[in-house]
Length: 342
Image 1 (cartoon, rainbow, N blue to C red):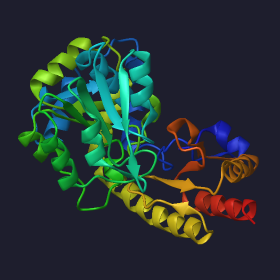
Image 2: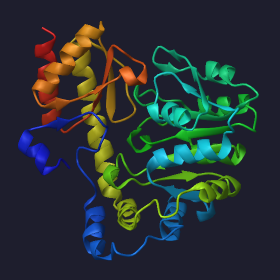
Image 3: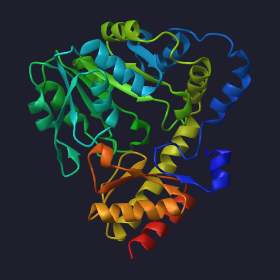
Image 4: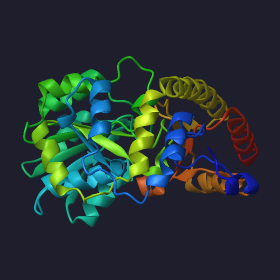
């Protein structure tokens, strides 16, 4: 749901992969019904939400930890499990939080290569050494939208030491329609070093409330809880997240609309002669012929009130990441790109 300020300014925000259809009405009602209780501290363990998530995934509540978005959980994993002389591994051109949080916490971050915009799992395993403690795998990958399959994730887990934690960051999992997407919970039973990250920021539309969670073995979850800042997840966020889980019709509809619009947007941008990676998320990764061409389009979009994300901080200097918006927003986007690339 765009803000009143954005409406007045006529801004189309396609830069942060937010749900253009807003949050579930059930989540908004939960906030409205409980805003009067904000003078109370939130629960520390968020047992009710963990139990609901446990029911959804058929896993014990003790296997789940709640955090202030996935970003807090990523930092907790680094601080808890990676020593000063040790390192983490992720791929080049991926979610920037892995590299940034490694730097903030003075841990080494090693990067594996991409192969035609796909994560090279063989190279990722090769980059690991005796001091690697955590591997971060965004799946689908942000910003390229590429997906690692079930067999691919299983092969990675089998190729690594069980002492290395593998984090499958599945922030965009609810947008995936490919049947070959990993059944991470099944793999976790075979590989207890697998940590699954999920968030309420994307398809659930609760990015502003900052709430996410990890699913892992109880020993790992307990260590993360002991490292977490008390009360980092607020009361309304937990209540809204719980209500959002019940609104299955909303998330199903958002998945369908995103899939339809993503396919249309991919085809139209490709027809303009631009290189675009088939995406499994709610965004497209668009590569331009040069940095000059990229900035020409970026500034043209900005002049038209459309915000896209420059990929230079992600290590892709000639690329933009563009979120999938509402149908009318996508039409305006394509027309603007068409005019800027004449």
